Image (cartoon, rainbow, N blue to C red):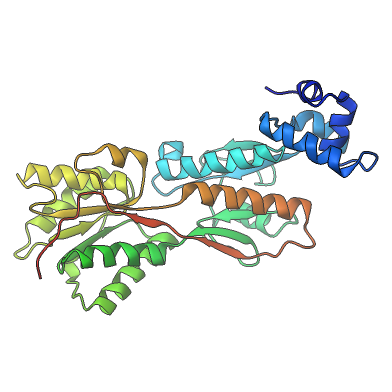
Length: 327
């Protein structure tokens, strides 16, 4: 780990001068500050939050409350990449992260002002949200709080439009369990289908929990057994899509020659499948970084930081699991 002494040697100045430059003291020149900060950045210097706290009487520690409906914790690729980006960004600004993921059903639960675990609708969370502590949420919105969300409406619209442009007119959608994210994607699916003139039979829309490959396996078989099966199936996420792919293979069908599939999220394992998985790739790096940067603004500039909802777009990754159909 790079220390201030290392920076002082590289810059040819004292450790005290480096400290003053990094802490924006006024008794050294701006050019000197700029040069020292640039060299520190190039060397990968990250301030130690513990020593910083002793000097400033601030902890420089950010708590993360985390949950997901699938109860998969950091095994969930989407959340793990978002959190990794968040962690890297706050560390670049001299902060540390305290992360605890736990269940809230135990007795004698602690206040969320004391312990970082979460159910967004729990009274303890509302206590935190209504407090004066700076809060930023990812993929969940509270009134008058900063929120960073993935553009699920545009994401689903882009994905279905891509499939439509490949010639598919019988498109099924296995969506995730009920949540704000699911509702946004499902509404966008129906709205986009209407705009494109697609008829979506009720039996084409099924539900399976996120990351539940067993459920998507069963739902896919049901769709394939319909008198008029879909030519393309959209899945709640890339991991759940694996269950559908296995069901298709069990039926002796080939992707995309016999039927097409598309996932959602853009997790890395999907890039190692054959054929390469078509998906809506969410920008996890921007989501995590935006949450970190805006939380730090709320902490350091509370009076001038505008509370807003920031929407991060994803993009369709074409892959090779959606074939073309002549229409």
